Image 1 (tube, rainbow, N blue to C red):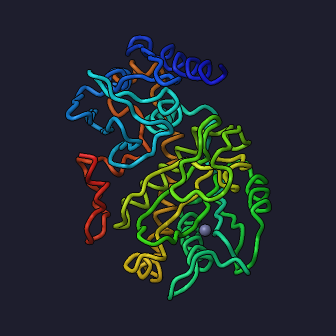
Image 2 (cartoon, protein in one colour):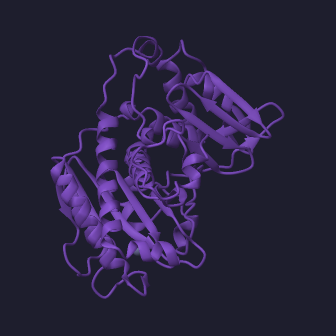
Length: 370
Ligand SMILES: [Zn+2]
């Protein structure tokens, strides 16, 4: 099948470039290709590997991965990702699908190796909704207004950092999803950030989305549209690794700067992600329906923080994909240049909590990476 060939091709690419580091041993389980976490530890050079009660922890001096068989929760440097396929457990080890290695772990751990990723010149900010479409509301205001305000704060910060910035809307007007996508696609060397807020009783926290890879079902937390069963390739899939990288960078940056619950990074087929031809993230920056979070979002200061965090996330992404090691293979780089690359989730390294966390309680999930 196309899928299996794709996994094998991807994994053997990794293997070829680091033949001295380790090999992949692929296991076929439940109709899919899986690898063990000890294999992951060996391949990515995590000297510390532990497994207790079906929870595996991988650590090196700069990174940490944690995962539990039977769930879809994968933590990289304390940032929560939802795997595309469940993590399995065997008697000896936990296992992760080859798809999740190639679509999450590889681009997040080694963003500088993403093929075709290049310097970001333009950031296209997309405040969700507008005009007659107000999006979610609470007693203090509407999603469309809050999202625009966050985007304006992000724009200011990005301009200060030297990026060009374009906005799909600058005022309270309706813009179709098609036009947002077409607008973003008109800029070369761009990234696209769509900004939204959630609303749902009982929900709280931040979640981020990148386009679901082909052959992977959407795992949106609140999926209501029919595309949940659609697993077709879309134009945006041409940059799957960049998509998850920029999503992780923005998500991690936001979490490290505001005290919010980490609802994780998920894959979905939202309209604005499908047709985009530049790296794209859709951020749900909190729940208007949550009494505490909704009230915080209603403050200009918090929206300013969100905007600055988004801008910092883009800068982190750009630095990570452009970081050049001293050449050579992964294994050589590792011995000659210890911090040989940058992970876009680095600000959340669990043993080095960010000094920029607010004085409020840190997110449970961020510290849960330990
Ligand atoms: Zn929305």
